[in-house]
Image (cartoon, helix red, strand yellow):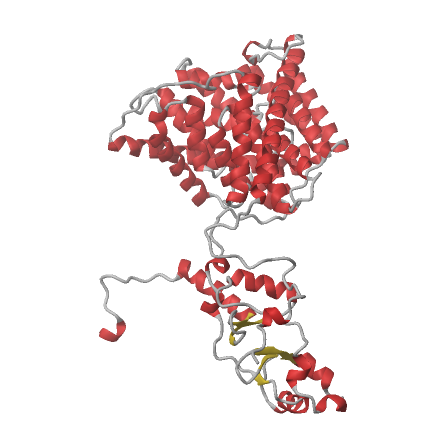
Length: 604
């Protein structure tokens, strides 16, 4: 009579904590993504509304403290009166932010994106309601009182907090909370800039740390919902509409790449200076609560030199792209904006980095454009995108962002050349970006190189040991004990097989230690002792990732591999086989050899 297979004999045991064997396919996404899409639509609405509230708060604070008007209409600080108040207002704003960080939440310090990354990687994608409230409020005070920042970093953190808080009301995994957190961040960025594609690319290149349909689709849904809300919240139209009608020859693309290299060097210099100034703040003999006020004094002094360097500065971007500015003003904005931004950000105040990066990259690009052929505004656009892509290590985000805010499709190839060149320079010059360096200084290691898990590419049948040492089920306990004690070298675990090769169970050294000295067991066969034991088994077609999960769940270092149809033992996988697989995949990066143009060694 044929005995049932292993899985039918022990159906009551689940060694994987609910992990099911997956059929071979490109992706692991299941129908739960539909639920995430619906939730992402709600989060997208919340992120868009949060963006409108943040921008309105910035305008309100700006109008009240600088012009004495209660209004949420945007206003430029170019016409702000130059007086002692130009120094006092940013300092007072910095002091308020320091107090909010000290007695509210320290997480409001900085530009928001590193904090969002930390929440994703080490915080289980959980953000607190306090951060969702204090971050936009502190950023509005910082930018409204003259801080040279943008709203994108704060809205990324605020939108992320909305997504995280919404997810925390439901039974969701950390990975699912991360998806909704990033969906809120992408929705906020989309609402402010009108750049849904760039927002989704930012999510992929910077926040998700993966590219899976499970996360990509809901984030795209949130961005799409946000862009639908944008006309009602911010009005129609592009943020910086331009039309350069670029028609570059082949050598023109080389100039675009050169522009990217220049921007990459600029990015590396600014990143290095930023953290050197931050180190200098760390040496001050006063509490960090007072640092934003000191940074505010520097901001105010810079405003006395060039008032347009204060605040977000979208008007400067428009003038650079439209060539409505003179070289002297561009140099002044470049130097003053860089100086006050570096000091203010190093002081730990609240504000984003994207708008300053666009202005600094655009100003340098505009100056380079005085020498290069074509309009300076075109090179300013390339400088903006390259600065963004290189500094944030997100070249595709930089490319699509510049295209979406201008609507000029003729610039796509030049933009790609510039951003990739800047990306290459910053990757080779600096180990970490302006965003991840802060996290690294807090003791967290981050890698942003994504790849397919080799454990999911490989099947158990490819790495299993086929010549397995086994014990017969007819072997007695006494013989087994003698075998383990009499042999100089034995394995920790042996599969027990029946005469026809079917797997009956396993015997380990621990079993033998328990059996020794028990005379009642001595005459029993292994088949009698292990036939009722629960044993985790794998199939040759299982992924190695599934086998590794099985090892962890069953707390064992060896998994027998059986034929799913017959239950016969066909192999065994141990931990060292997993390590050997990782080693073989590492060799694909390090083992360099030619195959063409050389003769095999045996033919020489």
